[in-house]
Length: 111
Image (cartoon, rainbow, N blue to C red; front, side):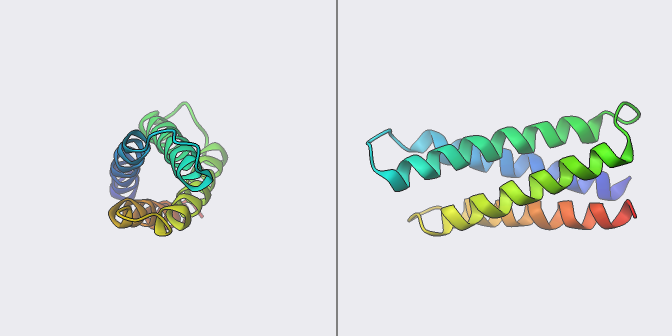
């Protein structure tokens, strides 16, 4: 249960960081800024959905939880790589990596 809570907390932090990063960027037409904005929005949505799955104790089976965690981990790592190339987004990239790591840790408890 502690791993589940830690994962949900990391997903919440990541969702907040990604949503904030996306909202800071204007749609100025540059490809990189648009990529950062899109990745931020996607990552926030996936992390939010993962939190909902983790909070629904009995309604999602272990295979469904595992699939959601793997999707979240993948999106977080992709977002972190994009944020790494954007000035001032280091903390957001770190939040994404922390979320990916906690998802990995929680997946290992499901074995």
